[in-house]
Length: 153
Length: 262
Image (cartoon, rainbow over all chains, first blue to last red; front, side, top):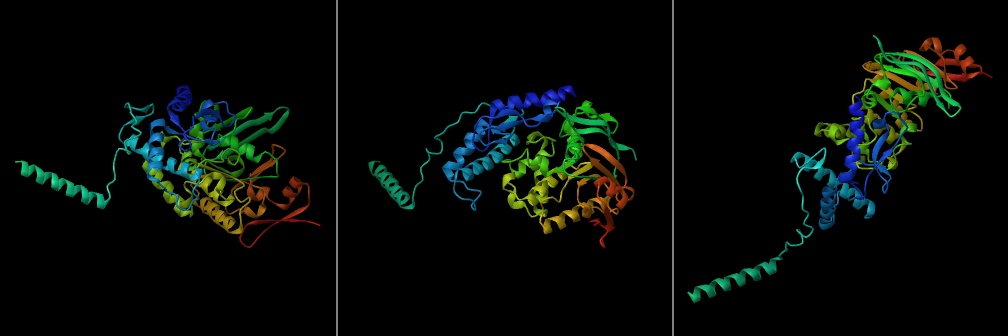
């Protein structure tokens, strides 16, 4: 039982190192919430920025969720005013989904990510969206190029 | 049936002041208790201690004959469905409704993902729908009305399937409709008889001897008297307790009514 008690405290301390707030991405701290002789009963992870008890998410998952929300203008809360709070709630929503998927895929465990992750911030920007007109033009150019090859033969 | 909770010489001292002093109380499993007392009599302090949310400085509390100090207090909290606006309003502010309810599964104040399964989340959604709060899942606790907060705390308690329901003045601050719903919820739970119930109030019109077995009167942090509801809630005892001449009647719906004599 003593082990159980100290385990939670240790687990939260470790989690504070590899996780951040799901809403604002800030660092998490182990804070005493109430007075109690049993340490595990009085402490929680806390975000000083949001002033809330916050379990957090892996920092990489937060970065990914934030990038997704911003790049795609993802909005789960259409009834809310467009402000910082809505943005943070959307990021937190995607964080919950990402976190679930990472766990489901076995890419996270109680010690955080189980595999090294290399974030490619520009991955989505490398993709090009082609409009219909431009696509037709490209197809024509391709036809002309193919014909020129046949003539050479 | 044996005692599920026993308090022996229980006390809580803050500086020179005793918030609670020498409380001895044996709570039988599946018994239904009313805890009555005026403001500042130590009711919330006592219940938050029994529920494992507050420490004590004197005496001991036993859960099925095992001292709280030797138990994992988070496990104790899971067995006690603690519903107290006055307590949780001091803890929660910006936390989301979903995190708050799910925290009940681990007996902590914050979310503990390891204790949560998809089945729990599905159950949470069903419960929120039942009380018409499905749209509030992502809302902060501070955005909610008093009645909504009360419902959220009930769901937090129920999700962990507790053995004891600890309700601390659940009707306070509720509008008439919410009060009616709360009364129906308590009645259903009391009639069901599957859980031990500790119900704190200072309103006699919330008490019916048909729903509760025992009553504990508290004054100045101490137990004034305890016993069967009908032995404790009567004009003589309550007049003495309140130090005012009062008459206790029963209304047509079975609930008590307190009348001050001229």
